[in-house]
Length: 429
Image (tube, rainbow, N blue to C red; front, side):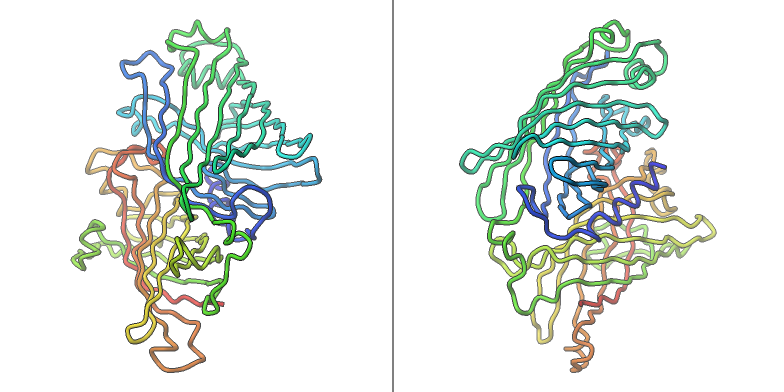
């Protein structure tokens, strides 16, 4: 159920997104460092993660950092939302690859807006095994010059089986728990599309949980600091201004696995996969803006679905991707484009090319990984001097899943991944 929910949200959150209103950005991409206290009796007191984030805001679907959802009902001042949110399981990083208890949990939220910029949330969530927990939260959005801030206060409820499994580690009897949290999210506009973002939150467990032998602290602190790219006010009002901007696209690609790393591929020195594992993908491009930092860089939200074909060493598997991709176009002497995408990839069954590499290094594979795409293509209308083909592009790209060099528990603290060389046709419309 969790795998299906995540695949659907990754593939569809941007496909139906249209620029929305309000203070939330229509799009954004960020990366930063997360610091979190470890509540358990371990020699290590804190764990760190590099966490990439994406933001897309539509009429119904949204992707906001580590949360994606769909608004089931909106009627001011009420809102009901089905969502999934990433939950970290903070333990020493040397244990995270073998345990991998971080999870996207499914939830339902009711929001009440008593007045403008203020909100009250009631949430109920569950992990993949039905262990439930919930929050009652109050917060508001504030502005002071270039600084936006959102303070929150909340009560945290955890069911008995949730407490026993995640705090008692499955070996200790415990009761349900009610704790509390307080935090503040920050966003500072440096200039143009560049922002600094951060968050600090302190949480305290209820008194009934403090006697668990597995824990050595009731109070924990979590923080995040990084930088982000969001639209300027002018881009939000008029995101597509260039007359030559081509709008939406549909890309169909076919690719071949290679055991070579990303650096070897980019230097055109790669090996062929001896088992000839292949993939076919379809990506949709939704236009976000036609400029970044004042340069003519086209930015797209690009969800995709990937079919990994069966072979003698693997069964058929399915991959969902959600990414933001940038294109730069130049003429030499016909039109060419360089493209780079950053996002998330979730696969229901890890492929042979990825699994074999990671197991050789002693890692347990992760279904969720960071996603990169590097591409170069040329316009077929220019190439054949035909206006009928002017919206078709032929290109080569690298389909890359990786784990950010053991820097993130979200990707299983892995060093490695998988690469596919792909050929594609892209239709702009």
